[in-house]
Amino acid sequence: MGGAEIKEINTKNNKNNEKDKSNEILKTSSGHITKLINKLPNNLNTYSIIGIDLGTTFSCVGTFRNGKVEIIANESGTRTTPSIVCFKDNEIIVGNAAKNIMYQNQKSVITNSKRFIGKYFIDPQVQKDIKYIPVNIDEDPFTHKPNYCIQINENEEKRLSAEEASTIIIKHLKHFSEDFIGKKKIKAVITVPAHFNNSQREATKKAAENAGLEVIRIINEPTAAAIAYGDIHKSNQERKVLIFDLGGGTFDVSIVNIKGNEFTILASCGEEHLGGEDFNELLIEFILNEFKNINKELDNINFYDKNNKKACKALRRVKEKVEIIKRDLSVENNIIFSIDYLYDSKNLEIQIMRTDFEDLCTPLWKKCFKSVDEALSIAKLKKENIDDIILVGGSTRIPKIKEMVKEYFNKSPLQNINSDEVVAHGAALCANLDLKINDITSKSIGIQTTRTKMEVIIPKGTPFPSKKFNKYFTCNNNSKKIVVRILEGDNSDISKNKLLTILTINLNEKYNEKSIYEIIMYVDCNSILKIKGKVNDEENNKIDIKLQFN
Image (cartoon, rainbow, N blue to C red):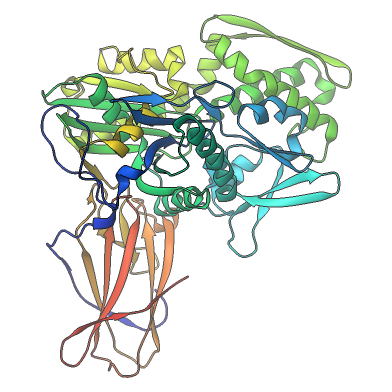
């Protein structure tokens, strides 16, 4: 901390359960899932509500109509939409149309915006990903967030943040959903990875609001999948279900206790930077290294050099085929990968075995099972206590992953759930039905007390909406302010935790040095941190004070 010298008084929990009533649409019911008729607040019945799975590589939208969930097809007739934005001749192109031209317009394409949303440019993972993004990415001088430097036309360049790119994608999803439903007034439940931090959740919510949607709830992706499971396998029997969610950019594992319409998350773990895009990158590097091994004179060529047009073109041609190769290796044991005149008139032709791909990715896949181990430990369960396993995300179609899951649990995962659509399915149910969802925070939140120590205020695994957590301070010198660094994470090395905000309390002259300043923290129904400030006056009345967030 900086500013005034701070003396800690005490910490206590207020037992009053504070919930944001305006957002509370999820209430208890018994028996099977039933329609919510008269409990929607603020005339919500006049609106149609959609559930959006905003993915790294693909997004999906569902709605609840005529007593069932319908996945909404886009303008191309497909039920998932590529999370891609492309600019061509001053026109913004999104989804399938953008994917069709992305390799011909690499300097005008935005991909993987979900990996950057809510993050700072200096984030190590952002720096790692920049290498694989064809467009230049620089640091916004005001927000210090990454900006895509997009070529709008021959003479114009535009900078867009990941939040702005996500807004464009969500607007597109909203537009074809309105056409499908036949209404312009729609609201939404948006899903995010369970491990998304506070900044990423806020940024996702803001992107949806900027797209013209009222967000009635942010819900974790594995939780949405569990809700879909409850709808598909209707039962009043209590079951413990493990959600194994491996998508294009993230991995989540959650263990959920399901009983009727009540969903209680027992544990939630994962990796914020692990998914199909990483597997593609490993395969691309393998192919390029093989190409260099065959053509030794190209050994010093950096195919990721954005200033080398020939290298960029070669990389683009390899990328075009890698996703197809990955899918082919799910059904074939080996394939021949060939590209004519890849670089300097040199042809590429190599054989790729399925085992080559598996060997490349196995270290990453093993990280998934470390998270599974951790989740079981937190939930105080053994493998045999899990009743069902649900695979979520396109990457779970990889045969080796299915095999590893089966070997780990000694049972097969469910086969009757669409891994691409299950999250949107659950989000649509959450938006429209009477459910009780008991979710938990995936990371601890605390304050920095010394150069190397963080005191945890809201522990990992805290149910949300949470009760209030109070922290009291007094100022014992003549300084004009108290400064508190608020962090999120569970690493003993606090430099590896995320700085959420630097909170400043400007001290009022009418309060003396014995005045007690109170910071009140709680997590709302979207798992977003809320902070208020109060001070006790001479008559011991609690008075609201203005907090400054940096």
